[in-house]
Image (cartoon, rainbow, N blue to C red):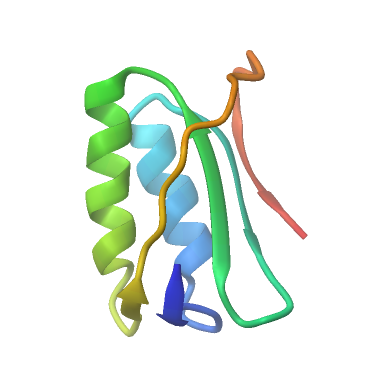
Length: 82
């Protein structure tokens, strides 16, 4: 995600939403000011997470979201990476 996505509790909100949806994966800030998310789970729930990511938490101003498919890792938790 690009835009105003750091310093607005984006990672914490993404973690909560992913856990609510039963997804696994991670979210992290990148040095360029963007946020990266990798998630796996039921396709419908992944779509729901993407919709959340396009909006973000209150205070975020998401300007773009890019998505791609990656091979599943089989993890069973969602975490904030640093």
